[in-house]
Length: 470
Image (cartoon, rainbow, N blue to C red):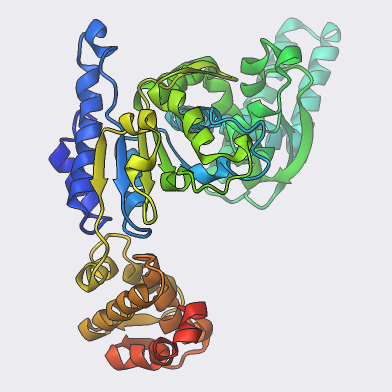
């Protein structure tokens, strides 16, 4: 974070998000203030809390994308939650503290992956050595040499010490040569398709993340064994598997990496990072404004607001990794506020979002820029996708203008869904090409104004049909 000034953060966001300068600046300042806070004396640092942000604007204008991109810029734990999920029927027992728990889970996965990456070279070297041992021991020549060595040890009493030593040295030399040949073949990937039987430790592969694996543990019975399990040293957690050499290399590397990573250090760092740099994006906050038709306290929007309040204000939440404070988590909330306004939220919650930024609806020019300027623009995505089948998409200036114009017109006629409308239009425009890409004789496709009108013009004119398709 020390390397990113607010100007640089905004510049990075410009690569992915068109316009919305006020929102970018507010986010950049909020993030830079976190770095500034870390440099304060401890007694002052505890008094400086994040200035939470409320983004106001219609859907599809970049609210979520801004929050997601800034979290990646600073490598911070980030979770997005829909405020409405806490108002659904069946909410009873579903407390908002799960937001903080999800944030910590994200942080644990992030930090664990970083620690694994740091030891990957050592893990790969250790895994290669183990794999060489397996292959040599399971090869006919290797078994013969091992048997000869064991026989020499067993029959040692019938030979002189000199003869026994010479025999053992000879066998060990031949084993080293065998190991060297196997190692060379492995490094050249010549054995990747061969089968080998290996000893596999507790299988974290069955879980999508380290936190999912931890979740399966019974902490009353397994207390004190968490580190042992994750480092693969828990007794009785091993079994034999017969897999390809390529798969064995991957499995053994993962096992060695887990053994080299100190899970206690990972958890301590993950909790600290979640508390000090975590970012929570709460979407659809406007849906929590009371509409007078709610069915009870457990699904009350105002009730959820009151439940959210202590989390946003700062409280200590119990998690499987220990207590976690939310005092210094940055909360970014968003809502369209079409039928309500921020002042309709309960006063206490309003006060916890002192920075309010209004995002602008997208005009035709903004939609054109979204199609072409961002690093991950839709046009670049489709060109790359169809390019895998040899199709060369050429978008003319007029074609891009027409796509943007159609999207803008549909947003005006129907519900305004912002830049998401562009995805719908692009799918309609390129449907035929995408379907028959592999069989096209002419692999160069030119998307001009006439082409766009031919594909979507009829849908635009038919208002009833466009409501369902566009």
